[in-house]
Amino acid sequence: MADGARRAGAKEEGVGGAAAGQGAFEEIGGADDSGLLLLCDHASNALPEGYGTLGLPAAQLARHIGYDIGAAAVTRRIAALLGAPALLTTFSRLLIDPNRGLDDPTLVMRLSDGAIVPGNARIDADEIERRVERYWRPYRDAVGRALERMSAGGSTPVVISVHSFTPSWKGVPRPWEIGVLWDSDARLAVPLMDALRDAGFHVGDNARRRHAGRGGDAPRHRRPAGRSAPGPDRQRGGGLLDRRPPRRRPRPGDQATRAAQAGRAALAHRALPRVTAASS
Image: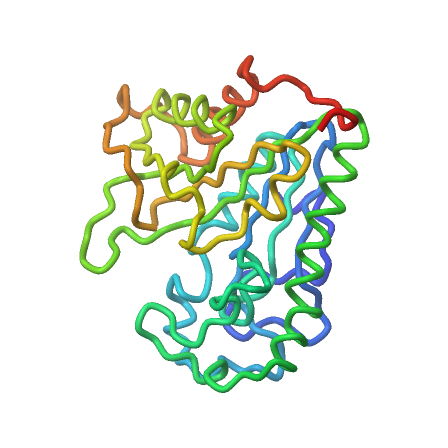
């Protein structure tokens, strides 16, 4: 799946592996007219040279607090199956979280799921700005450029951000295999959930979260110009509401392939007409 990848200093998952000046994101090439842009905000747990492990044991960085476990592999697999472009970060969310707005107090986490992050505990405004300019902003700008490029052909792309979540949270089991987080635009979210259930997945519907006060920044940089932007979470955050079981037994094939097939079916749904850039 590495074929077609354009790397801006890309780094595979690995504690302490990112080098200074290496870059903030990996870009996987795909068809701009595919109608789909895949994002993976928390693809890696790597940290740039000079940051060490932010004072954490390596085992902590290998947990979900350091990155979304498995999300990068799923993103690459779906991109390859659908021929869609993708952008993945190359740094740990603990350095700075690209899925947070600049005004979000969790942009740089000082405490994450019970773990104090010593390298962030006394961070000042200058260091936050340094991380914004070196890591947060280049990735966000790359998303914007990709959307503009894909919209230039006269159609508005769908954006899907791939994350993963833990099997339980604060002792409460999460039975879902996939959760779909969405806000007010149901054009893709509803047919996507239907297609995923048809593929045999146990799907959680996170609609009522509305992204309000619960973290995440999808509405700001993924929904301009009328773009539909659900974000599927793989089972690997509370609030998922739909406890309905899958409609049928799982079909043969790995999960990423089944999810990609469901995504293709949802993208072909009649409620998602091509929208010209001029009218967006």
